[in-house]
Length: 455
Image (tube, rainbow, N blue to C red; front, top):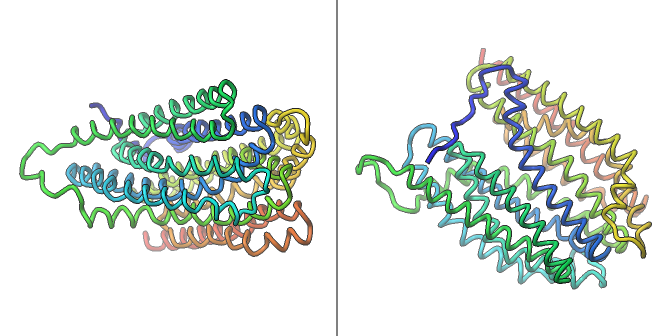
């Protein structure tokens, strides 16, 4: 089996090296977010505002589950990458079996608990009565498929860890396209409504996870040590599990904190009725496309800086930060123009004609008008976050992330009472302002400390 080789980011022109390294991450993000947008379009145009609001309400909950899976996957990937680079193939094999033995049972427990707690989650989110059934159907089916979500993320973590970034991308593209096709069949042809959307997601994840597991099995065989004396150690290793958790938990907590803040605001938004829920659902997916694009670039920057700092190429690492920030600002400026000038047309495309379409569109437009101009600010934060991770400053990175959650929880209710739904939208820019100030300050401080130690 031929595996892709790790990329050496310390060689070549910084601009082209960083851009080429980021492209696969950006493509993966595009297909993930494209599916979310298509899912929203099918819900809004083929079912109605209730379905659109129901799917949007579930989104922060699903992100919470995904945070756990992706965090554990990242820990597995980093561990496999380190051990594979050191030619310790048996340790990579132990990481494969240890992660599967440890985390798949966890996914089953989380799935069972999530299904059982769904009614309580819906009550806490204050879901309107007319959307309660649809929201419950979607969330229960999605939660039932968590073992497939975990299996897919763990498998792709192993593959990327040994340098194969192409195979996970192929599986993601295939899964997203299958999901869209199944959405159309189940919703448009069979009229299964919101349940059809959730079932399409479950089946697509199941297929992708099994394909990814088959690829991991081939990798496992490929890595089999040649000498019998090197084939030591059992299926499970507590030491390996500890290393995986140490590497993965910070990322997992970051995404869980952000999801918690989003869930808190979702509870407030749901109190404004179905039209606001539906409009926010579409606008938030558009917002997610922007934020996740910036985060993909930020993740690429982290890898670029880490390699160059390790090679004592400090000036090259600094150029990487400037390049990433410049690209992020150009992208953000273009998006701001598109959203402010063409936001209404985009929102109308996602909402079914008739009924309360005008109210839904106005709600989504209100979110975009308040939030989108501040993409020029958030791109600075996300670039600084990537730089902090790249220099290994995980504690300040976590602190900057936590500030976002604190602002959302502390200000959400007050702003809502003071300025209505516009006040809720204003929480986003305020949280970004606080987080950006902390993230940039931390990066400049710890970057200076790194340079002082190097001298």
